[in-house]
Length: 99
Image (cartoon, rainbow, N blue to C red):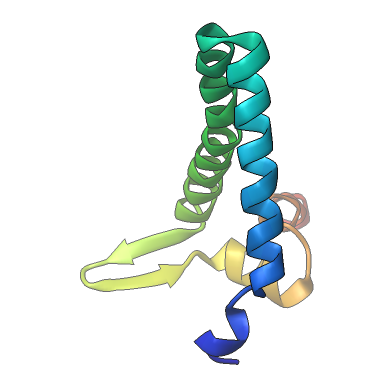
């Protein structure tokens, strides 16, 4: 797969552009400036949710590794979990119950 196969067709771009222009025109014509301000505030919510979810994923991933000098390695329980197909929390609980 290369970058040329990732481009959207022109008709998809035209449809999205037309939809955004139509919503902007309706908002500005009937709702006024306050409505446009409200739409700008609402449009930031999906981006905020993506950033928050990415932060939680990063924290979860960072808890599964340990740094030894310049080497980054998976912790033993995370490595065992990957090999067994279970989440790391279940594997460490099972190892703790076995000992």
